[in-house]
Image 1: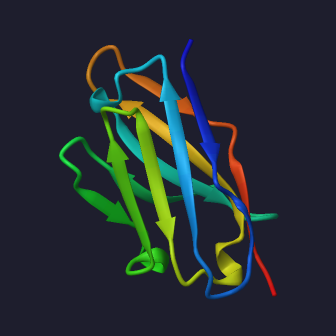
Image 2: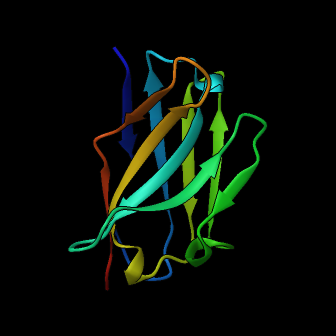
Length: 118
């Protein structure tokens, strides 16, 4: 059974930091492109960041320079370090794993809530 379990969310003041973790089980993490997405209240889910097996990352423009995504294939863990958080970063953050080679797979976690507020 495949599971992606996020943790590390919470309430933080503007300018603060959080580190989200995604623990993967039932998959070989190195076979997957991993990503973080978020959904703000009343808005559509949006892509935040991705990381491929060699560690190369991509970020949506609004988080560049503030968020850093990393992965530890040996521990089956993915991280999202979020610095200088702003109220617009508030939302539920979801971990996503995509296998693009056959057989293709697309897995999602249940999400972890991040609230940025003073």
